[in-house]
Image (tube, rainbow, N blue to C red; front, side, top):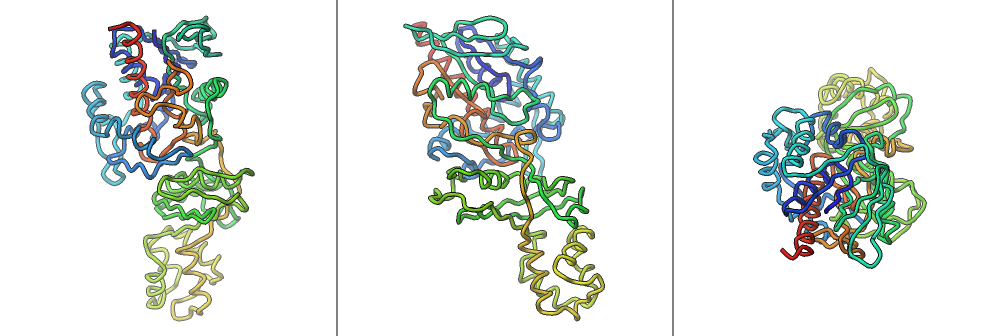
Length: 427
């Protein structure tokens, strides 16, 4: 029997593909229903996949070729075919974002569809069952899975318990603790894709305002950029552009030397000496464009700005640049123009913390990719143990990337466990 621990995105797919043999598959889930992160993703719509996937946008401490190979194991076109033809969920492209959602715009259809397919394939699902230990049986290649509802013997175990993000969905780090006890290398974990905190009285007055921006996060000599929605909150900042660079801010506050960087950047060698600096370009206009427009305008400067951004933000930027509200274009002094252009194109965002795992969409860090075989995701230390999904040391940006990772690694682990079961049975 194959035991899959965790009925989230990766675990459901792992269980489905583990049933590619005639062996029994038991899916254990600590909550009453499973797939709770699927239900809350995409504002309840579930961004199943991106329309295109760029591996260099993933973040990991592990060698990048391993991650790229895992992503290539199940191309996006095949993943889409699986959802539309096997799970039975038509997908629709959201043109302005390049994201794929269920045509129904219901995340529940994704969770329920995967759960139904697992049961149709013959997977036994047992909910409200907490796993307390996973141990190799002495003198054999079998496993003992201890749970709150008794022990189970298994030929293979797939750990798909997720990380530490959004603990209300059932993520509590159980799988990571099990992997650690079994001697696996665990890259330090941290909250990723999480809102940032911190503001000023002027910025706090902008709570609720949203717009598209470009953010540059500079830390340890590297600059990482993101582009997209930005939201002023009552505690700080959120939106895709903020979430995508939040891991840089989170890790820059830690005391130890850091290693996790996007794959298209070189490895840092220095220790953390100061928090990351985040700079915002509030519109698609660069410094030269703004300088020309400010030099040409005859009216109020704030009115020019308000044509390209929310009026309240325009007023705040003028104030922070030292401009009186009635300053007209011809009256702009050189130092005022310089300060205003910098505020418009390279505004240093004041921040002092983050919302942590409570609101993080994923967990950074996890089981080192070098600790699993890249094709099967079987542990290099313990035959018969497989790990997948958010437990592994990799995450991508907003936009369906992390579901693509969950689906691909879940499938690989399921097929790997099924192949092992087939080999053991001699068929």
